[in-house]
Picture 1: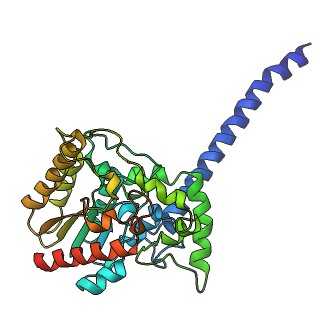
Picture 2: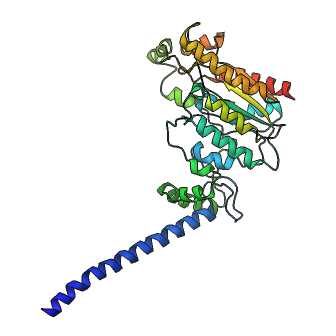
Picture 3: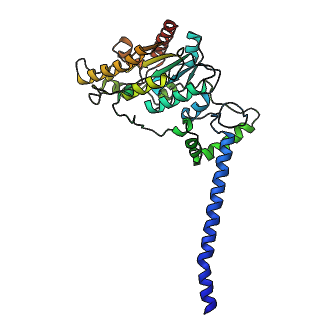
Length: 338
């Protein structure tokens, strides 16, 4: 009887010992993986003390931007979402003499864009950037100071807080990327993500049949307006952009672009939505007026190109013909700011 009781008494102790060993092993493994990820720098943030191959493997722009924004080959950047995605860094470089990189990420808003812009400015402190182009679409008109986020975004990757970055490394996605990173670094001739970040969305729309399906084209005739919008302010995105640009060198030109939309996305004159649109425009015009070497380009207007259904895939995604006209306006504005 005494022997049986003694064995049962020892069982909880063995389980506690096993649990402690398991937890300690898991903690050590996690720390080892974080240390390895920190050293091998899977997204090429430059935080590692090691000298590694530049760039990253082909991947989505949300993570690739951390590397592209550091590239000393570029001194100008394009920031925003898919509404400025079709603007070509190569064509802008040819037209201006500046070296543009596209740091867009589809389905992002002002909160994400401001973070990437902050990262770009910090990475170019040694050689101040010549220009930044920011696409300010309708999401920048929100009165919500939280600047709502619609899709997941790796905020930790661009954070100023080293602790937040280290915590971000503790994820399954990073472990998966770490394996690919090792292959990228070990390869004699690895495939690298496009350096200037350009991503042409026209082929994707064409695959979906936008050039051949009348029903898809017919959707453009339907109004895309949903409500009256923010007519009285505040406009926190404009305020935070202005505050952030105070950290940029005075010689850095700022171009604010209100991207083109199809005519059925524009509010009727005199409507509450038109008043809200005008108020938002004025908020960003004020930013450009108060800051030296800044300009607002407004393509969110009624003009021949925004009435042409052949120039749009949907209400907010235009085609190359419009993109080239917008690029010409950008180049002209930059020349005037010199």
